[in-house]
Length: 357
Image 1 (cartoon, rainbow, N blue to C red):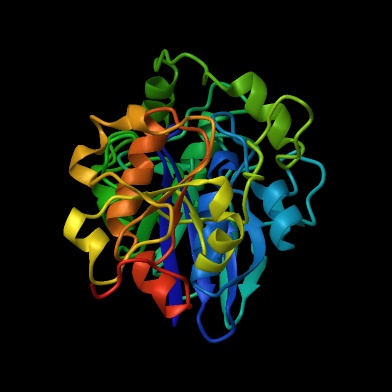
Image 2 (cartoon, rainbow, N blue to C red):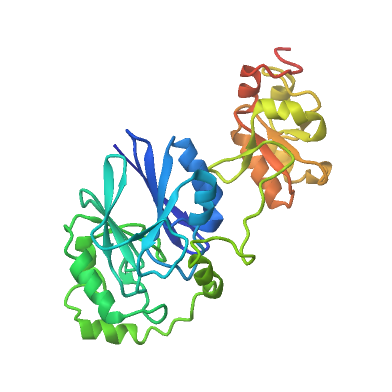
């Protein structure tokens, strides 16, 4: 069984793609984004996967890759085009090679034009193609920097991608229009730059008059990506919190397990956001917890200290996750949600007050 998860970075409109083989647990991640490291690492852990490779479609100019950091944290290896010019990769790829993950594989297709080192990855049954910036939904990558070549891009699309089955789904490197996915048949027919009866001269004329500014992060991203994302003083991921043992959730929040909260409860503010009756009876509450129901929290933030970490609590962890997000948005620096809420706290033997009264 194939595990497939498309992952979006809104700041750069970049798609990353996680593919895994359920039987073996092996996975690959296409075009990871530096700032999304924690999200990607969390998802890989939650799905029980082992990341074998990060695959780049090209040396990006609009974001920094997370490949190097993922190698440091998960032991994955880095692969990209032999023509990309980057240093520090574990494998340099050529047209026609295969990248295996468990019983599945991706076929490497060289699709230069946007840059000289662009690759597309075709799933083994040709049901999906990951086209990077070569072919976008109703568009394509620009050709006015990084050894861009309009003639090469036209040939790449027509000879390497449009020859795939019409039902093959196209998963692009970017999505600027909110469409997410297309198909080879759709792009053959409707792509205004490359589809229908558009010839190579038509395409060249179109691309020569785009008049686009260079990507805002280009001066930062390209040098970093030529190092496979290895930091060199110009980029830095914020450090993990040090005030407790925490784990990052796929929802974008830090969470703490009950046994870890037990060890630091005296040093933090435990914020219970349930209703008063829930707090007093039923599952009870954690000793020393402050009760601020979720519906009142926004108007009572001044009752919390900004100098001590806050752990939010509710029955199951859902309402308190919302409370944690509200605190982070309000500028609180050290915030975590109690994973599983009072249900998990009680199940793991945590002490309570008021239970069943």
